[in-house]
Amino acid sequence: MAVLVGIDEAGYGPILGPLVVSSSTISLPQGLLRDDLWQILRNSVGNRRKRLAGRMLITDSKKAYSRATGIKHLERTVLGCLKCIGKEPETLVELIEVLCPGCLGRLSAYPWYQEAGNHCLSADAADKGIASTVLADDMASNGIELLDMKSYCLDVGYYNEMVASVRNKANVLFSATCRLIKSAFDNFEGDDLQIVVDRQGGRIHYRRHLQRMFGNTEMKILCESPADSSYEMRAGGKSMRLHFVVGADERFLPVSLASMVSKYLRELLVHNMNRYFIGFHSDLRPTAGYWKDGLRFIEDVKTNIPDLKVDMEQLVRCR
Image (cartoon, rainbow, N blue to C red; front, side, top):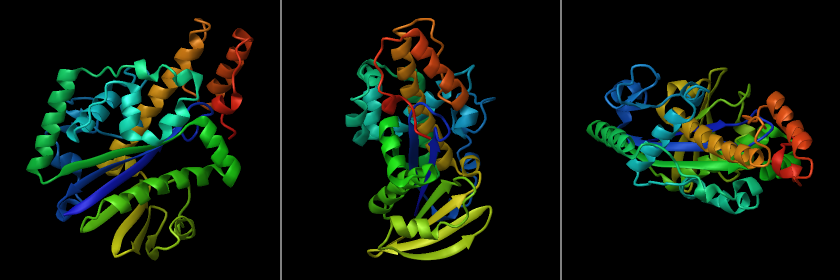
C-alpha cells in the first residue's frame, strides 16, 4: 500500500483574511498511484460542477467556488469527507478544532472571530451523509481510504509576524507547507509515502529550501524541471518522495481536496470578518479581501465607522 498526501493553499494573494494551507491524505494500492482517481471513483466524485448527479465535487477550489453558488460545493465536499474519517463539526470553532486546533488561541484575540462558536455550518445533514457514505463505499471497493485532513491557518497578525521575521512572503508560504509535510512524514509510515504539492510560483529548485527546513534529512534530487521537481528524503529509517508539480490541483485528487479545504476555511473566516464590520454599518459592502477591493473595504471602514478602534496589524497584511 502507498500513502498519498496532497497539499495546497488558498489566500496567498489577498490583503485581508488568512492564508490557509491544507493537506489531505489517502492510502491506496501502489498500482493506483499514477492512475486517474476521478475515473476510479467516478461513481462517487466528479471534477466538474455540471452533471454531478448527486456525486461529490472534488476539484481545484477556483472551479468549486463562484459568486453564484458561494461555498455550497466547498462545504458539502469538506464536511462530507470529514464525516468519512469520523469527524462531524457543526460550528466554525468545531471545524477549526478538527483542522487546525493550534490557531484557535490566536483567533480568539480577533474581535471579528468572537462569534465563531455561534457560526453554524449549513450543509444539509441528510445529503452530506449520503454523499459521504457513497464516497466511503466507493473508496473501500477500490482499496482506497481517506486517512486525514489538516490545515495550517496563518491569521493576519501571525502572518505579519512571520513576514517580518523572514522578510519574504514566499518563504512564509513554504514554511507553512513544510509543517504539513513534516506532519505527514511523522504520522504516516506507508510502504510508499508520496507527497504532492501544487507548484508555488516559478520556483524549480527546492533542495536548498528543503535542507533549511529538514536539516537532518538525507536528500536526493530525482528531477527538477519546469513541470515537476521531485526529491527523495530519508531520516530515522523512514523515507518519502516529495513532488512539486505544476497544476497539481487539477491532476491529483488529494491536492484538489486540500485546495477545497483551504478555500472553505478561508471563506468562513472572511465571512465572519465581513459580518463583524457590517454589524456597525449595514451599507458596508463585503469584500473577498483581494488587493483592490480590500483597499476599498479598508477605506470604507475608516470613512463609515470612524470611531471604531481597529488593530490594523490584525486586519491588514503587510504584503
